[in-house]
Image 1 (cartoon, rainbow, N blue to C red):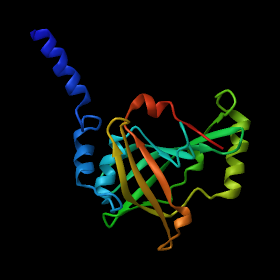
Image 2: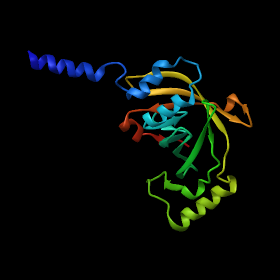
Image 3: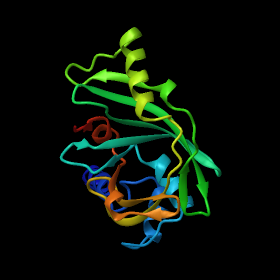
Image 4: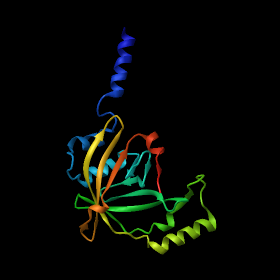
Length: 200
């Protein structure tokens, strides 16, 4: 009898609402309402709580994704991954600055030197001259010193899927265009996050 009760208790603990998220992230979620702005202090907590942020997710693929590497009171560093072409995926490290407890703004950090690239066909890394040529190609369309700002509206949380959904709004020179809005799904389950890819 005691063993059965113990097993039942363990099952209940494993499925109890709220346990899909770490305590700090759950506290942020509990304060949020759909459609309302999330303070950047709350976003900072979700940055480190989630395993991966997946933008404009379709199935198990993202248009692009972020993994937050470090966060403090001034800003965050993160690894961005996305397709560069139909043949190549890239990843690079960038940084953002928190402003007005609302925005994260690109810090203007030069990120092209940090680019890593992989074949979309077989996952093999591009190296040497091939990687050098790709970085030169990227430099032709970007100086690697972007300076847009972003804020986030809370949408929903799904304890079973271990996800939180936000709407990201881009602010450029103080102006936001709804055409640039992006739904971002925060994945807290490590296995699911690691299984995500990117669509071209």
